[in-house]
Image (cartoon, rainbow, N blue to C red; front, side, top):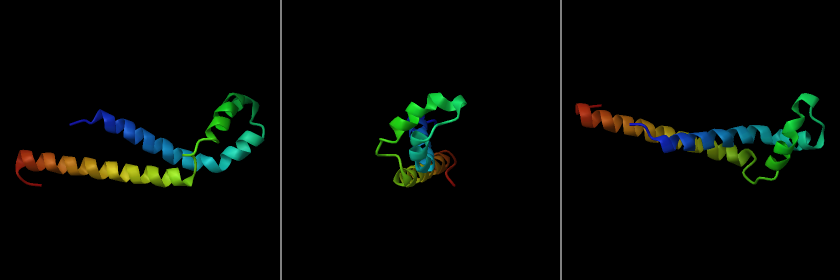
Length: 88
């Protein structure tokens, strides 16, 4: 069984963790000049610095979400195996 909606949840969790890792650098990126090859990213980083989910808390939530998702998928795999084979 494939759960397509869980791929979206997994993607959200990954983005939350990535945002937690990049958040300490957002202020310096928006205040200092970027290299000329990355000038197009400055508005993106400026907008991200205003979102409330950016920060270390989002990383913790993202990791917890990922662990919950992994536990659910492991449970579903074990349950499917138990119903088809009658054992774990």
